[in-house]
Image (tube, rainbow, N blue to C red):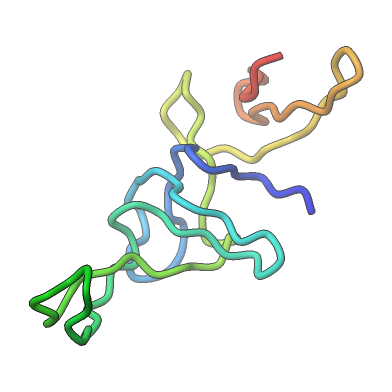
Length: 106
């Protein structure tokens, strides 16, 4: 399934409680159409003590959000942009619809 964002992309949230905030994509769940964005959609989670976390307690965790609620940020303008696809030298590459520049390198 081809999506408009990939792990490592800089995105802006366009809907929800964190609207207008920017962050880096940490993980993409393609089948569920969800993304986890760094320091966005953070919730407090009660966690029992484990081998890794001896203390337990309340931790803050970035939760998945729907992929339709984020837009890729155009590197040249710094504004959110829609994403298109072009076939260049036999490969499908993403490009910014706002500026026309390639997002993926060849």
